[in-house]
Every structure is written in C-alpha cells, then in structure tokens.
Length: 90
Image (tube, rainbow, N blue to C red; front, top):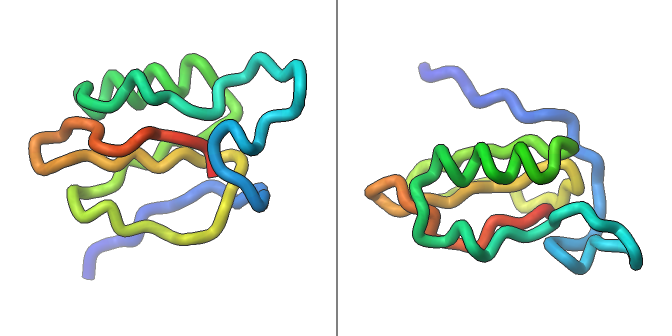
C-alpha cells in the first residue's frame, strides 16, 4: 500500500482566495497568473509570495479534501504538469 501524503495541520477558515483577505492585507491569496505554467515554478512562486501556506501538488485527477484551510493551497495540474485551475487559499 502506498503511503498517504502528509498534510500540515489545517488552520480552518470558511473562505477561499481573496474572500479570506482583510482590508489592508498585502498578502497574496490567489494566483490567477499561474494558470498555464509548469507546476513546480508555480509552487515556488506561491511559496515565495506567501510563506504562510503549504502548497500541495495534486495528481491530474485533482482529488482533494473539501475542508477550507487558510494555510493551504492546492495545485491542480493537467496530465502534462501544467496548472489548470487558479491556485488559491482555502
């Protein structure tokens, strides 16, 4: 049996993306410019621009937990390893 990926403890929130922002917060919560780019440089960009999140790269099926975590970003690639959905917190 393959080992399950380890995820960081979830800091729960009831929002996704920019809906999680508070006024005046300069932190990035969404990265629409990464759609269409290779997955690993996209992951590095998210980690560099928001060091408070764990970036989890999914497989091409993009199956993931449905809880909302303010400290996690799912990266959903296509079969070629290209980001296909807007990465965002939640």
